[in-house]
Length: 366
Image 1: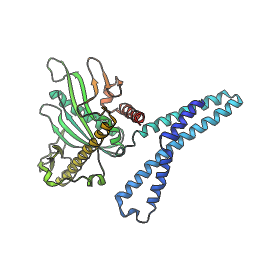
Image 2: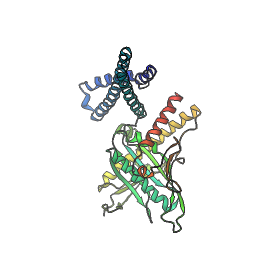
Image 3: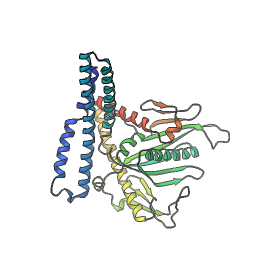
Image 4: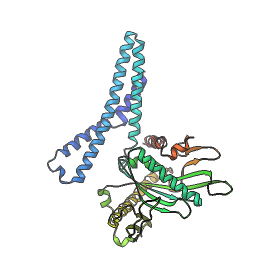
């Protein structure tokens, strides 16, 4: 009992940087009390958001530590009095504390610079013909359902319908705190194995689709990224409604091609060309920010001598529907036979396994 308490207590007090969080709260409170605090509304909102985030962590640590202290006191008293029933009660409190500590450990995995931000998700059909195009559409639905399950606002910004079935690609906006922190676990190539519904001989088909996720960066980060108009090719076209959605009769959809990098983004979710242009530019800046992040990560990986970076062409997860049923994440070896639930947006177990594995790896390297 005492060993378990010591380990859990060390977790609460150490790895979560409790003292640093408390100090940061005091610093942010001092900023918020400044007379000119609301002169810069965007900065004020960021300060309040950071303050609330730190307070949530500190309150959660306090609650977990309270459970540990209560369990310890009850256990010591029960031992002195030979009260077996109270010993069992102390163990139950310790179990609750360990669950709370586990939640904190997972929350610690979402402490990256932009983890709290909303997410921009791109899905593209890969090798596999019409099956891969339908697979891309299935993935879009999976992320839509995941977002809806978590109470996020989900919006399709752009899509390119395929000729026979499915889509060539789509762009989604998933709005809410920590959407990016969770969904960065989805970056990479997703592989589907099933009996093709498009094959007259009902043969097994392997399909691939790529997923890219970037944070919907705030104005400060966006304003730091300069995109001269001379670097852009701007195409305007009519939006192509899918599944009974509205089809604009005017050329309100916008496609931007960033000539230096070759990045192409498009938005057709609004009836206003001006709004679609603003959203497309935001998407482009998020992609350019992510390229710079990858360059920094590459340099760090090179300095550390590590070759663990997941590149765009890597296969991160397989969804097998025939000859057996299983979803297998190749990075964590997490497996589940409930393929239908995963495709219906039940991704939390897969996401948590990845983030905890990543966090453990960073902790070991540190």
